[in-house]
Image (cartoon, rainbow, N blue to C red; front, side, top):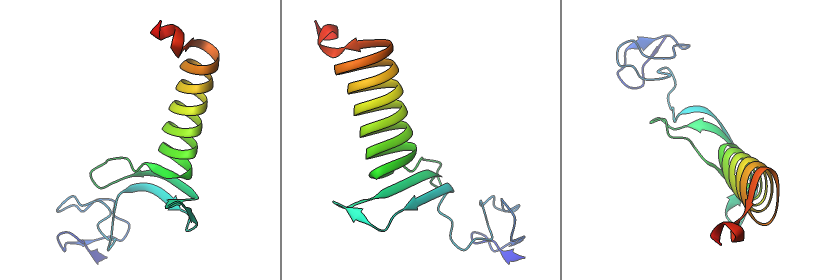
Length: 134
């Protein structure tokens, strides 16, 4: 048993929520959100070489993976592997990228189910931006 970090109530070390105040993971001295995150110590231009984020903050906002290689639910990076992301090369469900392999994309070159492209595009329903603009 340990005291809850928020209210001091005695709680089990394995408790998910404090029964008195509702604090998540009350036995942990510090708690900064749900999920998992990793950032490499090596950086280029101020960005980590690798940032993996499947995490939400205390107020349940997603933590965006931002790095040279970004992997996560939401990502921004040179190489982006995410559900929703922005990158030079992106493998995503929904993306904006230079090169994209995605379900829905806006890119210079893409291979996707639905997308708008500038130079080349292949997929189920893809349109060239210049033709859309007339």
